[in-house]
Image 1 (cartoon, rainbow, N blue to C red):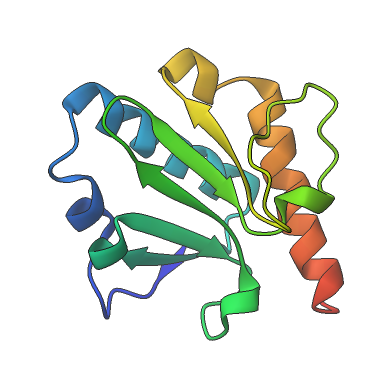
Image 2 (cartoon, rainbow, N blue to C red):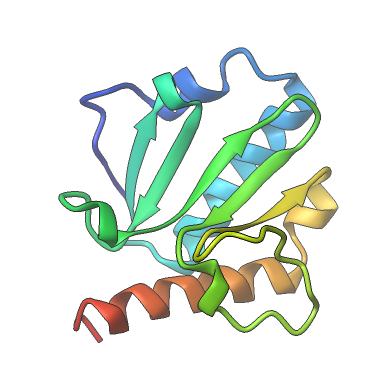
Length: 131
């Protein structure tokens, strides 16, 4: 994993989050790195989220994000409307953006979450001509 810490760190984003919710964020981060070891992490403490991308220099390289909320983590996908979602986990009605609300470590570890991450990474690589 490579990180752009020019605006802050992962810890800056989760520091004021409840411990149980922070644990979910750390688990999702771990899963993202397992799925894509070359991921770019782009923390944005002022916006209360951490982006993850196939590159860090352009906004369109970011495939998803982790956003701590009061009692869950929002795992978002910037191009989520184009992802296969047979389990119907993705929420949102925007043109592109979709997210999954994750309330527990067990939910974070579901194979469907890993599959969504794999699909989101593949979608960005294909869209950018990297695959």
